[in-house]
Length: 458
Ligand SMILES: [Zn+2]
Image (cartoon, rainbow, N blue to C red; front, side, top):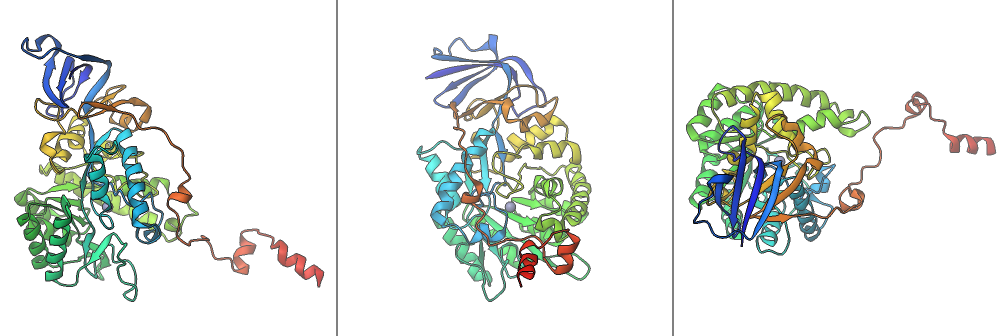
């Protein structure tokens, strides 16, 4: 079955330009020709069908390296870790993976989830049971007492249904890596820093250098890549020295970190959409705002952009991801905002940002050398866009412009399906955003009707 696709403009992911009068020829899901319409080799097999995308901009399917399939658009950590059974979270993850695909994201990495949810979603799609994006799956984050995902007090610990796996020694960490590899993960996720800071404000790395190097060495020995959560300078430096493949955030990196990352050939996935959305969307009545976090996030965002611009200029590869799966980053909604942020806040050219979101990010994904770029031999994963993202990358966030999504040549269509988010997530027992003392009630101008009625009765 050979299909020929006429492209209005073609962006292959290998170069900075869009070309006119190009065609793709696809055979058994793979590209057998990419180039000018009038140069299709005479020896090419007979074409069975023609797709006319001559009104559209054709480009590789987009890649999000940071989408947590099991979080379910959570509002709280408790919703992520506790309130839904793992079986339900898997089915929900599959539903939401399809939302990502519909948004033009043909490949995502789910870097850290409870149980074996991400790899089960990956397998259900790989085995052909459901349509969905290609999934690169991690298991639970390896965490220490100082790491992200060890949220709860020591008397509760890290529950088995949590996204984290608390390891309290180097041996336990090595054992957990071997268990996860046996279960079939594509990559290992380490919570390399958390929320603990020194008195001067610096984030404390959750593992020391020797532990970090031991974990990374073992994962690499077993043929798995390693991705870390590292906002702080120290964790970023340890990760780079240990040869970690991908560092998320790296907001406080300095020149020493940049040198170490260049030396180790690691990539950075800044995931700036998440803090940007927190700042832009959180309303004054919400707990994050009331706790004063928004001003902190805004400050961190500005520091991060200044530092990351230097990292980009120094030649470190950047990958696009969004931390989708939270209430501020729902699946299928904001993935392409990261591309716009790369251009506006990190100084990428539109073409470089589009290459980051395709070819470069595919470089981290499992079997990533077989897609991510439109060239002969790779899978025909591509999207047809109304308008040119090279002129305005923001149009990729407009779902009405993502006209067609193809995965291994096949056009996929995800049905629109309404649902009640309160049933799907939102189980945590948070009931109020305020503390209703008598003084506060007066301040808010609330008339306590029931109380005054009672007083009148007596
Ligand atoms: Zn994350």
